[in-house]
Image (cartoon, helix red, strand yellow):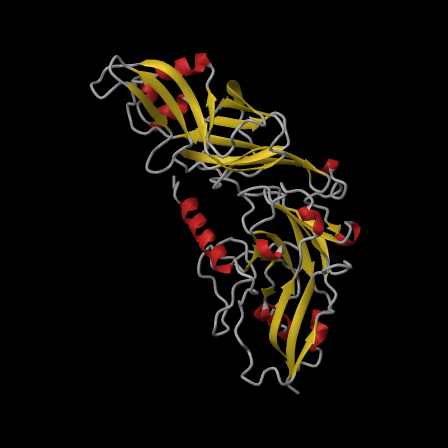
Length: 449
């Protein structure tokens, strides 16, 4: 099991978003004309853009960089429930609770420590967290998606969160005394012989919230996320951490993210099979992580711009603005980056036949060629600019030029969060028909005839 891959991609994601987090547009396309390119340059931003809101039916949340726990409800995105499923890692084989001289100790307490990366929602409202033991093991050859679940059994820990809880510090959730005793007495037995035996006995946990309107992002890779066994001998007081191994504290994991759109004032009719025009949604595009809500963009009359075959692009860029509704509550969080997935003529995602991975509108390089350099660098990304309360304009010159040349089908693309598995951040933005800050494709071009 490769527990390090998401940590690496997370570092790469941080690097690229820091690089882009300025007030300038994303310069992802080359200068296609010489020094005199602007002498005969013409401009248009009046092309009709059709937008619809949809929702993906599957999102891979296996090995998500954060474990999501909690509930969220508002009139825009409906009700969401996030539960985390996780497996602990033994720090060593043949684990026994003793001191350095081999003296077996006496149990004091056993605590789940959860490092909260971020909490959002109504952080002043009370909330009850529960931890259940799973009734079967993880299938480590399986990819888990946002609606998957592993059966769970007995509740083994509970924590009440209220306005006095310091969410900037790790949460400590004490195990039920009988379960703490069972785990402690298993030390030195075959149940702690190795990881395989341990998983047969302690299959994993489910962390959930049974109330409240708040969601927590738990960092599974933090040194402060572990199962702590506190015990003492006649000469020493000790802490044994279960869940710290080779820099990884939690092993196999995934997030279950369930959404009920029936309580949304706008998206109650949305299903994976039924999209909704933004004209019926107050001229808003909708995007939400975790649930896979996206907005499709189509530019139906684009080819007519080059009907005579005499158009050469200098630049093409897409601009869009968050609506004011995004700022009505300080607890609303917007995606830190957006990306653009290509669609085929049927409106489905385009995949690379060789890798079976979804294809994106890609970054352009200085010589005009388009290529994929890596999981992070291959995607065109628009980063959120907090001090400007906007997203970077996105240059997609080569993509638009290929459509005008007839070498690419004009099937459109879907705008979604850069990482659908890292949270439940969401966004409302104005569509092309909105009165304020409408979505626009700005095209600067030169006629060659």
